[in-house]
Image 1 (cartoon, rainbow over the protein chains, first blue to last red):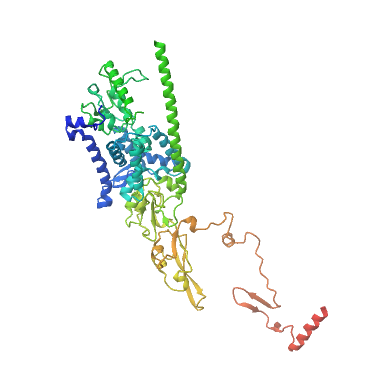
Image 2 (image 1 turned 90 degrees about the vertical axis):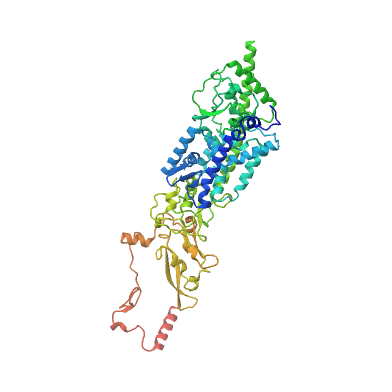
Length: 318
Length: 295
């Protein structure tokens, strides 16, 4: 691995700029379109969607409600009206199907902030990072569900950057820019991918929601992997790639792990597909997760990458 | 060879277990810190500024903060731009809807679109008549500056009130200052006031003399054991405490007193004669003699 080289350089050479940024561009398009749809009303008086990510009404008919915030109202002891319940069920089914954290990488406006921080981190070659456990988010998720039980109010919404920033853009920012700056600096200076991949309970919730989601990234062509590490460099959840890419041995079943990235922490952002010059990855279904290649081959790959990972301080694997 | 390998894997799993526990403890610690901070902050933010009024049908503040998901759809469906969403850093809980009556009061739409828009029922959907809304209670808070209290006929709050002559009435009182005029005192009746805030908006003073306040600030509450005697008596038809004793006036024979009617009634013209003689001097002498006698 050549660390001075920007990840994706080979992919741009072999596939062309557009194909090497395909999913990134689509993702930005999705994030910005969704935000624009919400902003069309307040800015131009075109009311396609009213509300915000917490709850919205599209074309005056389709209700959508964030199941995470609705869960918090339930824990606060409130029985919601059917509109909110219907909206939450629609959202639940959608993300349970396409991958919970699709919300994180395709919808959430904070993702653009943390991606920007990560980009700058690479440009400035900031490699130090405080090591937080990626499980911290699940503890925070638990805390945000206990708080309404204790206080009777949806306490997390007082500080939730995801909803505060999106709501702020639509209804007025107030001091919400401070949150944007704080998250940016956290990800830039304190911890690599600190917010989205370690702390955010919204992401943790959607992670759990997408545990059995149908749409997954697959490393079907994993034997073509040349260990260039580009996918690891761009991945916000680096730990999810290795089992599927390297065909590690599953300790529980004692079998070689199949090519599907099954971890629900994977955000289905598709960046690994973009930057891989060897076209190892593609979007697919989680079905048919069988091992086609020989075990020996994988073992050597596995050892290879582990050694490299141990030597590269810039990459954190938990 | 095989024992050696099991030993090393055992060591590895012990290390990884220790690492797992350590990681978990750190994560739990961080999460509890977050929970503590947010929890304390949430307790503080329960107090709503008195000038911020919740939309019609809003649940009690504590329940409201557990039910409102901060989507802002009530704000969007308000045709008069009355409702606002609190921004981050506002004194009102972030993302929750409110209005300031002095800026834009509630116009009390008959179809109550804000309540209909609420997906969770933080604005109670059972509210179907806007006159039943109790967003707050108007209070004439500054009698010293209210023009009507000076004997002037401003009457603006009374005139603008959507529930005129029920929620606000003008009560005539004697104007002590001039000694010969009347004062028309705007009087709010909680039975009918919805707390829309139109009176507060309309008040002509530089700083409004009448304003909508949260119920718990605006309204007193009687001790639960307390009963108004006259109301109980009216209902029962008689006094419940003790039988009424008819008031007795100690009047000279042949005279009576009607407190609600004629006043002093002299029944017997014959007994007009007083115990006093025609000559006042005689009377005086008699009295002084009597006084001297007792001495």
